[in-house]
View 1 (cartoon, rainbow, N blue to C red):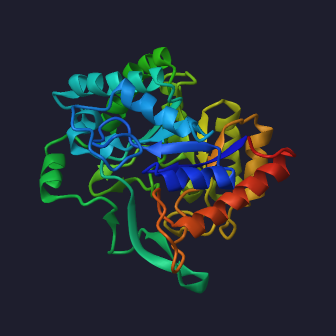
View 2 (spheres, one colour; view 1 turned 90 degrees about the vertical axis):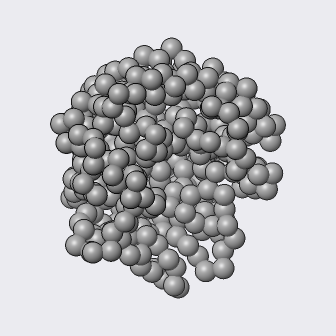
Length: 349
């Protein structure tokens, strides 16, 4: 098992810091449907990123002695791709467009593409604070202050109103996507994994959430039983599920890791499950993180653990990744690396 972190912009500073801190594995944000070069803030200025673009990124990261282990993506939250999520007239054309880029990614040596199935993205209510005035995000199903982390425009809401957003139709569309894209990914040598719905509630903004339960993910992984149809196992979000209560989080880890469905892990902690929770420091939530990592290890998991949604520490320096700055992320990295060594008896790869 090994450690990683995810970066939006692969600057010289972040790559040098990765080398210094022993973060040998890099996950980058970008991929299909994104108008920027991979792991960059520069527009690519063309229809999509190409094989050459992904090779250039991989070779640049490898020049530091580091390894690309995956890509994080959220194409389904782009209204352009709503025909895939809900079954519109351009569905096959859009799938073909995504498949071409996914194929190029696989050919370029990108081993994993992780994505989600949340057309209106991640939602949160008002945040809260932990020790020392540390800001974290939170969710309360009873709060009137709920919104997507994306700016859902009136035009997008009007667009959504024109689709069949029933749960049954959304499952049919997800199954169509999985059955179409999995053999393409397999032929290109790139594994695909879906992130759980965050927060894991039945519906938000009038749009059903399909992947917020143990049964939902069993159904997903059984659509096509292939190692190329897997899970971006955000342990934080799985820990928010009702199914995580009373030790259920360890049961879900064991079930999917034993079946080789866990492509990589977002190793983070939360205060509890829906209907109300907040994010935590990696070592202050309700999940026993050592027991969790031991469960992955015992189940034969050999993949990557990355920090995720780190708390906002006062005075921190911005990190070009997900929530949380350098200090907060380095704290989580140290914890993950020490935990890996404690559980496996070996230093992380």
